[in-house]
Length: 132
Image (cartoon, rainbow, N blue to C red; front, side, top):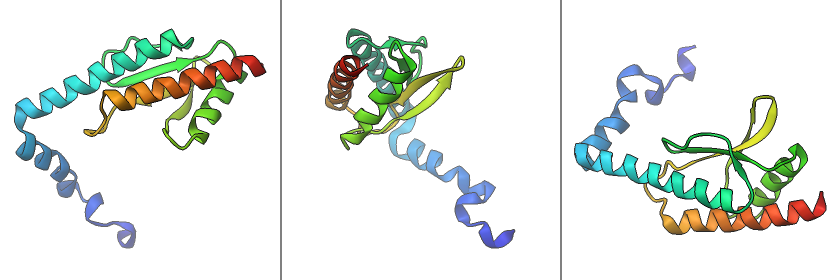
């Protein structure tokens, strides 16, 4: 129905955010931003692995897929980490088992945010393992 469509749903308007980013940052700026997101995702994967998580994907872009040893521990670690109110990420299912997925996608994300996420997830992994 047309009444449910706004400017954000028109085909022509969908390109405006990309156009604005290219206009503002330029090709080199966009390249640097994507490279930074990929680097931060690799840092996140390294930290999660050191904290006892299993990283399930080859981190080549900005997403990290990870889990703990058990399905229950994975679900509980997610719930505990999100309950802190200091980070948000979503659960998913990978090869029939619960997993967690984080994406580095904000231009504002920096090293300190990755360090904070790893610290929170390391703490929740320790607590979850003690409870399981």
